[in-house]
Structures are given as C-alpha cells and as structure tokens.
Length: 94
Image 1: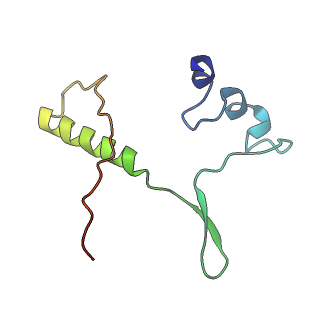
Image 2 (image 1 turned 90 degrees about the horizontal axis):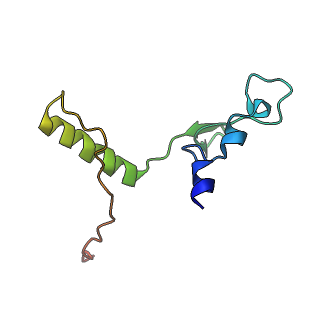
C-alpha cells in the first residue's frame, strides 16, 4: 500500500499517467488531458470548471497561517502541521 501511495501525485493520479506525453494538452496526438475543477452549468447551459472548497484543508491552512503570524514572519515552521478533526455541533432547535 505504501509503495502504491508513493506512486501517486498530489491529486491521487498515478505518476506515470500524470507525466505521460499522451496526456499533455499540447500534444495534438495525445489520448487525453487533465482539467482542474468540477463542471458547473449555469441556467443558460454554459459549463465552466470551478473550484471546490475543501473545508478540512481550509481549516488546516487557516490555522497554519495564524500560527505563523503568532510566531512572526521569519519563524521556521518547516515540519509543523496541524491534524484536522471534525467537531460535531450541538443540535439546534428549529
């Protein structure tokens, strides 16, 4: 499993697929290409490729920004990470 995980790029795509000339958008003879985002179609039928908001990653990066700011702009935060946990909310009365 570890070897498989190491063979993936940050998007979970196998490195050999992510780096293949067959998937180069500038290769007119390629078999495919990558597109970032998720398709969003407006009421007029126009599709654009928009981002998603990964709220777990946002929480981690926001916390990292606050930590770095508290330590000062020259702080060495190499290797520092904040695990992310989902905190259940209390049920709200309607």
